[in-house]
Length: 372
Ligand SMILES: [Zn+2]
Ligand SMILES: [Zn+2]
Ligand SMILES: [Zn+2]
Ligand SMILES: [Zn+2]
Ligand SMILES: [Zn+2]
Image (tube, rainbow, N blue to C red; front, side):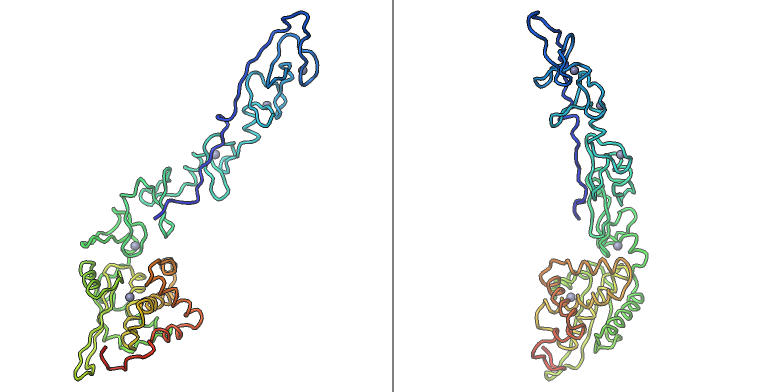
């Protein structure tokens, strides 16, 4: 979350800089022998009343506004040696509000090259707070989805555990493990294993379409929907940072030969379908890695490859979640998951999925059927 960046406050400082005033009336002449001064404009001697401004003398009717030409009287604005009525100056030089067209005096907001009165901006252009639906007048916070909230309403939202959007608390689901599911993810949240199974099948097929042939039949891959309290201890035990899913591999061996293998995929319950599929793609790629003995090269290659598989599946999906998630992969600062993904993506761009699979297998693979 960051402070909304592209809004620049500004100020057109009429009141401060200017409105110099003056009322210098002189009654002339005092000394009958002295000649009255000449008017700096018309050159005639000033008899009676006049102004003295910046060392020069003027007839009152000769001391005029550079914009309208009318006499300035006792008040003026001075800029670069030129004198104006305050109103004329504002009219000519103040920035104009791109909403109402009136000149702006005092505070304004500049955004994308347009300027607005503070109030015009607040009522017509300020971002809407997702928590209240109202335009934001104070500090604005924005997330990677481009959603905005007023900083003062931060306590009304949390990040959705499934998609990362702002989840408005009174419209979201709060799970017993303290995760929050936003109103959008709620609509197709995966809460039953049968539902998850169907999506796992779909993901398996999507990976196949991308050229990832998993040499384990789907019915030998177990799926478990779990909550955070269940997932985190397993993740900790096997030392993974995968936050929404885990792939576990087990085998039984006799006489140094594997006699049976098992694959279990754990995925957090209540993910949206899109989010579930991305996690499933990542974990199914780990199944592929185990099955072809690709495990071992480095965690960057393992996790980068699994994220690349997620990316390839997201590429087959429509909609804003897929777009958001792909973008997230590129921006992930993690040295294993993020750097690993970017490295694998370069290979993918160059050599396609085939290249990714080739790079995933270590130089001296353990023969199939041999335990590690
Ligand atoms: Zn004059
Ligand atoms: Zn004027
Ligand atoms: Zn305005
Ligand atoms: Zn969500
Ligand atoms: Zn992983």
